[in-house]
Length: 119
Image (cartoon, rainbow, N blue to C red):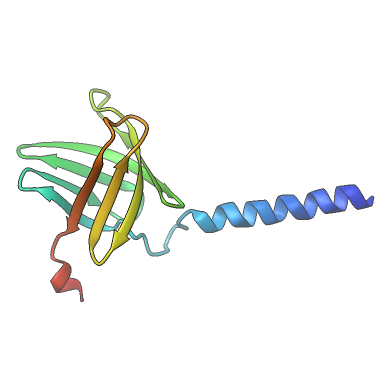
């Protein structure tokens, strides 16, 4: 193997390792896991395995989700609901979402349900 191919191979392996580190691994802790409350009408539930449900009063919308770095992508099963992505941050059981693709923008604060009971 010549030197250029060797360097390219090593670079590809390192790049793959870095990308893998940014995505949750099946079975690893998922920071989104749990129920997050936006207001008395709106909640988001994340199962920690890539599936969830948005509850709006009497309605509910299932979705799958992916985390990559600080990006949350949500793919809703119901085509009437727009798929979307958010930049997110979690501090002290407060989830901050910053609207991205498929959203109207804006910043939203959600609070982990029963945060006191999990400590």
